[in-house]
Image (tube, rainbow, N blue to C red; front, side, top):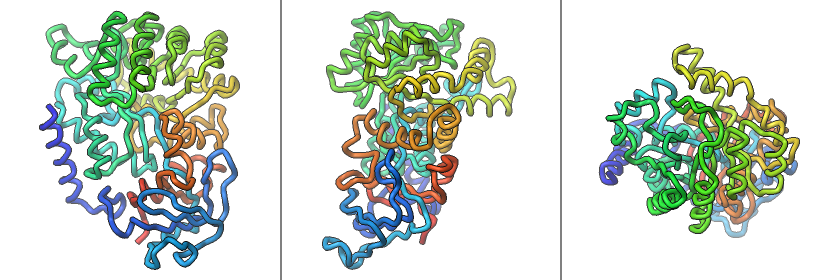
Length: 451
């Protein structure tokens, strides 16, 4: 499968080369971007602290070399060549590249449409889809993402192609295939007749029993997974009428977490019901994704742990938009769960904020539309976070969740030069982040309205 997949990715690269890249530049390095001076009208260099006024950054070899007050040209930096390119962002607000801790790049289809796509499309198709969605995500100002489950290893290969400069896209940490118990949320055979199950299960990972779950983790690590994703509860989109409560035993969850940690991998856990959240916390999970139902006991347990909360409120946008376009987009138990999910949106986030839980930004893009990741900010603020907290969740805090806090999340000397610019103050109105004007990733200009 690997050779056809790589061919598909190279074909995407060739296809992109046919179009103008005036908005989103190629990821290929250029001499002009090796040394850069960026002059910012306001600079949020350390999210959580007040922004700086007029500020200049010196960037070399993809890293931040200096941060100075005021507007400085090459003569103000002893190391910078005289011809260093100056990027004039004096009329814009500059901040670190954003991080989305929960995406699914291979598709943004759902409901009956996604079910049909899963049996009519092949790996090469999803390779193209993932590459296009990665490009949209980067253009939206998200320079790093954590991809939590895909089809056929597509995003593992896309991660490597982007890192090698062959395609534009965000930096990717990838989970390979997410792990579920049989009949659990991520069992791909749910809703299909028996004779299709073997074909549908190919490239996906289910496990039953502790030993089998250890095997499942090792299988993903052998494929090159950066993080392990598992489901301890049912899911909103699961085509099975078993609800949103616990669907994994304690020994299975412990086996997954212990094996992942043995290999130095963090574990992200899909969990809606309080019982499945508590199970994951007891097992030592590193993050809880969705976390829709919280009771007092689970919240108290969470406070004793170091796990992060990734709310993924944007899913409700995807549900509402699809139902508005097609009232029959979801049927049966799935439709009922979606109506419930819309109705409880934000309740758990308010509890988490009041309870002092550590919160990292994540959208579940794929359920919502790719390129619209910043819609999450508006929901985070609507349901209890301040703009300052929401921005920190998508920068420093998300970087810490991903284990990249020494490399990303703030604009400090030595860190990756991931910067974005917007035409407003997101600390006053987070909606300005829905229109990112300029993107720099690793010192390379990826999006620019500037000449």
